Length: 128
Image 1 (spheres, one colour):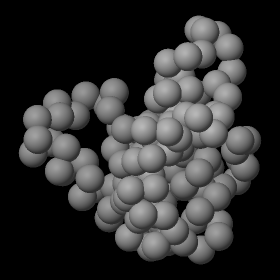
Image 2: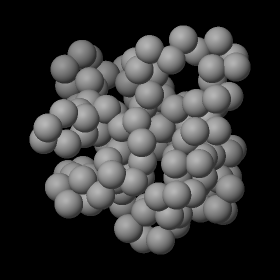
Image 3: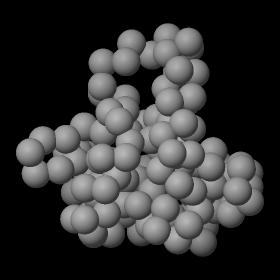
């Protein structure tokens, strides 16, 4: 999933706290960029406004801090992903059960995939 540079710039202006440098958002892991790109795509489709996103993300970060997150910045995109999942469920795009099912399937696929190889999601990954 590639990032639209203008959409990424717009997001960094609208949502405070996005880790960035002079060129735009920065990511430590590929999944962080993918989560960011998913939020950009859903915003572009009108699922949420950036104000709504920023409020939901702030709420998620406060919840994590109350549960003991040290807020060192290393967990920022974990909060981003949790916010994305919550908004998707709240908006009726997918149920929390469906999101959990896919998360488990990805875990199964990752467990059987050798390091450095692409993860391939197979139907049997969805078996309980």
